[in-house]
Structures are given as structure tokens and as C-alpha cells.
Amino acid sequence: MTALRTVTVDGSPVHVLESGTGPAVLMLHGSGPGTTGSGAWATTVQALGTSWHLVAPDQAGFGRTPIPAGSRGGLRLWTEQAAGLMDALGIEYYAVVGHSMGGAVALAMAATRPQQVTRVVAVSTMGAPGAPLSAELDAVWAAPASPLGARDMLSRLVHDQALVTDSAVDTRAAAMRAGAAAFASLFPPPRARWVDELTLSAHTLAAVRAPVLLVHGAEDRVTPLGTAAQPLLEHLADVRLHVLGRCGHVPAIEHPHEFRQLLSCFLGRDRGH
Image (cartoon, rainbow, N blue to C red; front, side, top):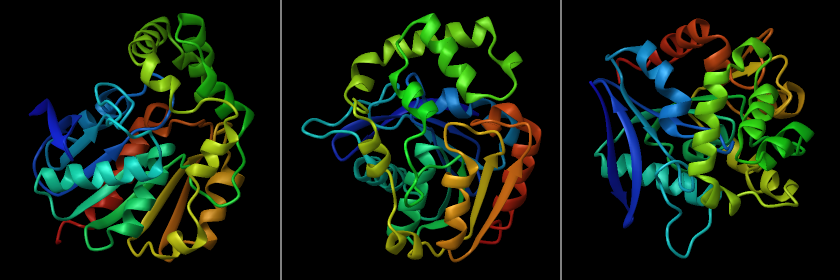
């Protein structure tokens, strides 16, 4: 059973897609305009079935989750809100799957919540020390909320341009328009500072004790393999990297079956927890 609901976290509403029962998995989306928890993860949630308790929130400033009054988006807010959400749901132990920005949040959660976070899957992740702002990420964050802007953005995210369908463009353009006001406050130019803000220090990464699986596309131009994933191999205590060929920034969309198998296999080791 898949349900959409709103959970109050620290006095502020968080919109959540929830599905299944079993070991809990928190799924955190990336930072592109128009991104939502359900938009990013619905097909993965469906493919994983009902044997996991999957929790996919809209993070603050995205979808139907507002930025709390007196706050602004950023790594600390997203990390604290995600941890607070799991507390509010009464979930004590959980794995975290994060895409792009969500990967940085997932790793930050593992560092600050070592007793709760059992495993991390960081997909096309941000957060590596020294990672620069790529021209592609700059363009994604700057994409205007229009069909043309949506098409341009989606074409940068995927390797196989056949995935940039009219339907996908229309859906994303509508989501971008709906979230335009909140998104405008998150990553205004100059944008390199927001990559720096999402960067995790060597000290923080050393505090991650949970096993980490990095999943990355060889053709990812938004968070390139060499600057985004490979440096993390030097910093994380228990880490493995799976690279997919002919894959850009969204492995869950570009290689859905293999991605689901990777998740099931890696997360399935926790079933005895």
C-alpha cells in the first residue's frame, strides 16, 4: 500500500510518500527544480515491492514541503529535518538512499546519527571534498520553469536522449512551475557556494561508520565520477563503488532494473537487524 501524507516535524509540515512494511529505508531526492520525493522515487518504490518500509519525503523547499519560517534550505536543515521525520514516524533504525544532493544529506545523517543509520546508498552523490560546481549543475539549477527549460534540464541529466519524452518534459515543467517560488531562494547565483555548502569535511566523512554503496553513471556530467564519487573512496571507512556505463546522472531512471537489484542486494544484508 502506497500512501501520501503530511507529517509535522519540528512544527513544520513535511510531505511524504510511504510504502510497504519491513526494514525502513529513507529515500532522499536530488536538487533539480521540480524534483519531489514521489517524482524521484515512485518507479523505484514500485519496483522494490512491499517488503520494505519506504519513506520518500519532499525535502524543505521542494514539492509540498515548505522551508520552515525563519530558515533557509541547506545541508543542516535537510539533514535535521530528515532525521526528525524518522523520529516522528517512530522509526529507530533505517537505511538511507540519497540521490545527488540527497546523497550528501544521507552521508551527513550517517555521520550524525551513527546509531540509527544502518546503511547508505549514495547515488550520483554530491558532498565530496573539493568537488567543483560543474557547468551542467549550474545550468540545471538555473533552468527556467518552462517546457524549454525542462527539456534542456532533462537532456543534461540523462545519457540516453530517448528518455527525454514530451510526457516527461510536460510533467517536469508543471512541477517546476509549481515549485518556482521556493526553489528561487535555494540556489541563487553565484552557485559555487551552494556546492561548497553541501560539501562534507574529511572529519565528517570519517565519522560515517555504516557501510556505504556509491552508485554512479560513467557519463554523469552533473556530478562527474572523478570529482564526485572517486574522492569519497579515500574518506569512507566501509565503501564500495558501482559504476554503470552508458549512464548519466539518474541511474534509477536510466538503468532501473540493475539499480533495483543493487539496492535489494545491498540493503537486504540488513534483514537480520
